[in-house]
Length: 73
Image (cartoon, rainbow, N blue to C red; front, top):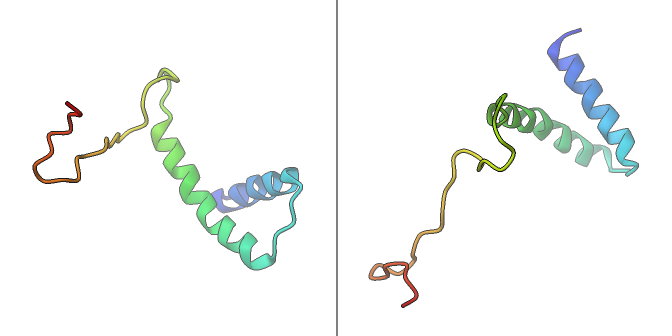
């Protein structure tokens, strides 16, 4: 079984388990982003990583005003 076949089977199983009906066009778009999302999740999940550890990379909000220091007072 190839990786594509495996991903197709996983996607189809998850789709069936969801119990929702989508138009074929929407299902195709959902399938198109499924594998990249799985790849991204695999890069983030590491053995031994505590579940409370932040996702990487972590980007915090920045002040929007050029003179702002980010402090409220």
